[in-house]
Image (cartoon, rainbow, N blue to C red):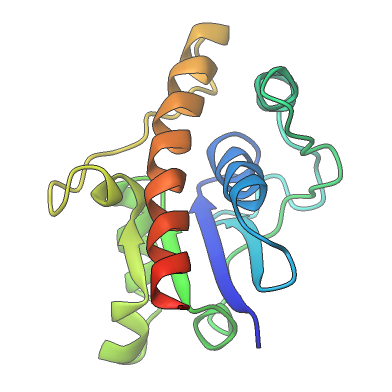
Length: 155
């Protein structure tokens, strides 16, 4: 049975598609499933932002097949780990949880780098290309730690 990981941001076109693509590139798809979604319905069915596509491509990751989806309560049952990109989305996800088991599946992604600090991955949407590069670096480091942890726990 595959370990399933869900990356969540607001619109599912900038940060979470990058996080999905990065983590997928670090894990064997035979054993892991990585997906992403947003807490809002703004972009359902849309491709990732072209700037996310470009920074991913620059790092040999293809996210062009991804399409935006919205987080739903059933995702708590589907996924083993749910990573929010920031505090606001973390709170929106937790508000939908029915119990502590569901709550415990959710964490802010940068806690993988800076435990218990609840730091936000900045939303690069309104900025320039540099913001997407910075976000990529943050997510790459966090996903490296997540991949290492997952591989250790599966041994």
